[in-house]
Length: 178
Image 1 (cartoon, rainbow, N blue to C red):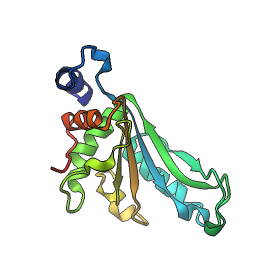
Image 2: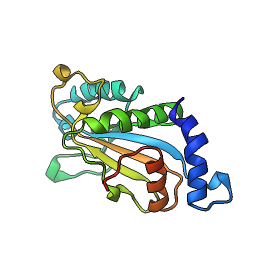
Image 3: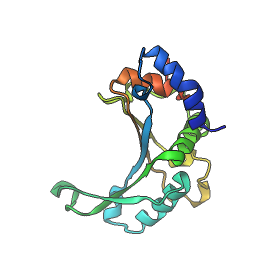
Image 4: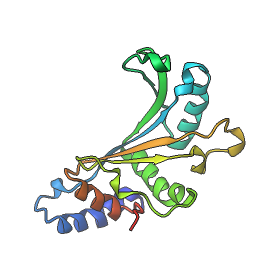
């Protein structure tokens, strides 16, 4: 049984009762997960986008989109339109599979892991999480990694408050610090 079935059978009724919602459609749920890698070194080494893109594809199961600079910054020798990162937006089944893998496999492999911070919520109930090393994902072969890079993960929910988002992610198994 997958995480989506668990959400519908266990998490959704519990959340509805805990948040005292009369309409089941108002119950918070996951919309999408965005996995982002910033690559400042792509300005000098153009092959880094290909190498990290392959790693991101293996991690998420989806081809990444190249992100470009919106504005020019002279101090960083950056021009608007330069390729500076990669992102993947996961929805549906891939989103639930990635979330389950993140909670059960990846986060416990992080060095000195004691839980994720509760302060990663924005004002709307979405959660941001940074992972310092991409090698904590089980699909990545350490021998093929040229440089250890960080990954930014944004979990977008329908929750309207950080408290509702926190309860949703707790019920879905996200290991928060006490």
